[in-house]
Length: 255
Ligand SMILES: Cc1cc2nc3c(=O)[nH]c(=O)nc-3n(C[C@H](O)[C@H](O)[C@H](O)COP(=O)(O)OP(=O)(O)OC[C@H]3O[C@@H](n4cnc5c(N)ncnc54)[C@H](O)[C@@H]3O)c2cc1C
Ligand SMILES: NC(=O)c1ccc[n+]([C@@H]2O[C@H](COP(=O)([O-])OP(=O)(O)OC[C@H]3O[C@@H](n4cnc5c(N)ncnc54)[C@H](OP(=O)(O)O)[C@@H]3O)[C@@H](O)[C@H]2O)c1
Image 1 (tube, helix red, strand yellow):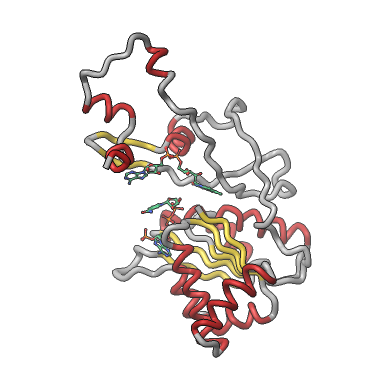
Image 2: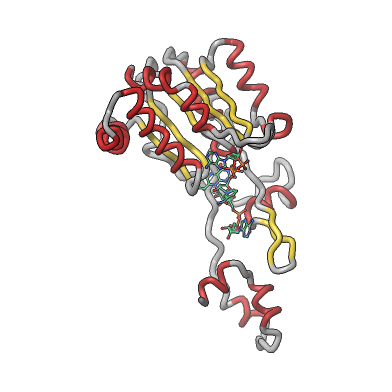
C-alpha cells in the first residue's frame, strides 16, 4: 500500500499531499534524500571509427503524473539542459564482458535492436567494417514511425547498399493499423534465421526488457520448434541452454 503510494510520487507530490510537513532548515530536508543513482547508456559508436568520442542514443522520458509534467532525471537533463560539447558531465565507462562481437571475424551476427536498443549495433557494425570482418551482418530494427524514428537510418541504408549490412529488416509499429514488431519480422524470415543459427551465427538482443526481449525470446523458441522440428521442450532447451549457456552465442543487453 505504502509502496504503491510512493511508486508514482516524487518529493514534490508528497510534500503537496502533506502540506503540514515542516523542516527546520533546507539542510534537514536534503539529509532525508537518497543519493542519485547512475544511469547506464549503451555506447552507440566504435571508438576506432570515432576516436575520442562516445555517441549515445537516448530516449527522453516525459510523462504526466499527479497533475504535473515530469521528465526523467538523466534523459531530461540531456535533452533540456546539457549543452553540446560540454565536458563537465560526470561519466564513467562500465565495460561489458559478455555483450561483445565474436572474436572470429567470419562468424555471422544477427542483431535485434528496436528503439534505443539499436545503440550497440550501430557501434558493432562500424567496428565490423573497420576490422574487415567477413561474417554476414543482419539487423532487425523496430520503432514507431519510419518518417521520424528510423534511428541512424541513412547509415544503415548506406551499409546495405555497400554490402556491409547483408540483411536489414524493419518493423515500424505505427505506420499501419496493426502492430508490426521485430519478432514478426523474425517469424516471416524464420527459415533463413534458423539457417544462419545452424551455421553458427551469434544472436544479439538489446532494448526493452519487460515486453520486447520476452517476446523475442519466445519467438526464438518458436522458430527452433517449427524450423528445427523440435518438441516445445527441446526447442526451449536449445535456446535457454545450448545457445545461451553452452555456446554463449545468444547474448542480451536489456533494460
Ligand atoms: C544496461 C543498460 C543500458 C541502457 N541503455 C540505454 C540506452 O542506450 N538509451 C536509453 O535511452 N536508455 C538506456 N538505458 C536506460 C537508462 O539507463 C535510464 O533508465 C533511462 O534513460 C531513464 O532514466 P531517467 O533518469 O531519464 O529517468 P528516471 O528519472 O529514472 O525516471 C524513470 C522512471 O520514471 C517513471 N516513469 C517513466 N515513464 C512513466 C510514465 N509514463 N508514467 C509514470 N511514470 C513513469 C518510472 O518510475 C521510471 O522508472 C539503459 C539501461 C541499462 C540498465
Ligand atoms: N514498460 C513500458 O510500458 C515502457 C514503455 C515505453 C518505454 N519503456 C522503456 O523505455 C526505454 C526505451 O524505450 P525505447 O524508446 O528504446 O523504445 P521502446 O519503448 O522499446 O519501443 C521501440 C519499438 O518497440 C515496439 N514494441 C512495443 N512492445 C513491443 C514488444 N512486446 N515486442 C517488440 N516490440 C515492441 C514499440 O512499438 P509501440 O510503441 O507502437 O507499441 C516501438 O515500435 C526502455 O527502458 C523501455 O523499457 C517502457
